[in-house]
Length: 332
Image 1 (cartoon, helix red, strand yellow):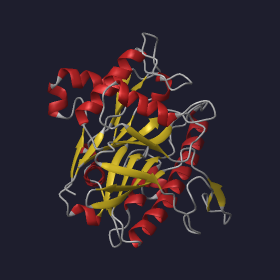
Image 2 (cartoon, rainbow, N blue to C red):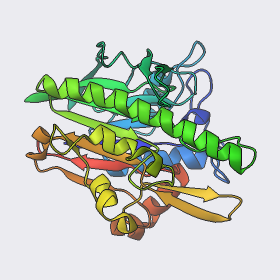
Image 3 (cartoon, one colour):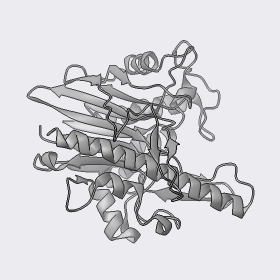
Image 4 (tube, one colour):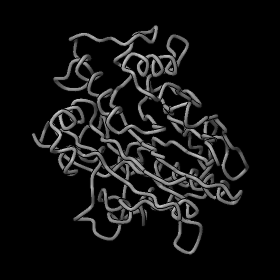
């Protein structure tokens, strides 16, 4: 089977309030890319990765006026994708949902949110002392993770789709404010990852196989403030070496050899007039799944030789999003 996680930048802007795809030459939310270009690029990438289930990060909005599931399923039908069914969990207010797009002939999926005193349901509050002042503060997810019970011929497993807090100091005026915002954002991102790790512990304690996938906006050695907190959010979710760990080979490479780490995203820094690449997207598996010959791949248009040599796929990856898909092939 093949699983994928794919952050599709501002996918929501390609649809009107009825969920109908806006397929014209007006500008998309991506720089110098039309809505038609982005839509066809996304479809081309999804056809090429050909996954049985795709965790879509920044999926179309669900609200009183919009239906993200209808938008995704309509998109799949229009472009002839085999992933014709969509599942969404707790909706949010950011116009960037988390959704599972899957092939109903291969798998079935249901939203199965967990809740406990240690790990509240992801649409609720998590109390934690963020700034070491002996006072617990409430933390919430702006994009609550999507917990999925996935069933297939011969078995089942759990999925958790994640879009963690960005640490970027958006809107900061001056270096001092940027530093304060960066530290505050990192505290919240780490708190979200601690909350997520508590849920991971509970799933693993129940004896379930688990894949945690999505955009963590973080990784080992990603920014200078990591030294203030000891480790990255990704390391927290993966777990301690002497406990029930999750595994992602790209995260392990970044942890042990940061100068040779792979990347999953590519952003234009307008003020510096250059591109920045970073490892932000992960597919973490539980130990039980490591025995099933998992194979990871980042569909990077410059770092993956096949993506680079296939001109149509290369361009589609660049047009579709500022993130690139990560796939996991596993014998189940």
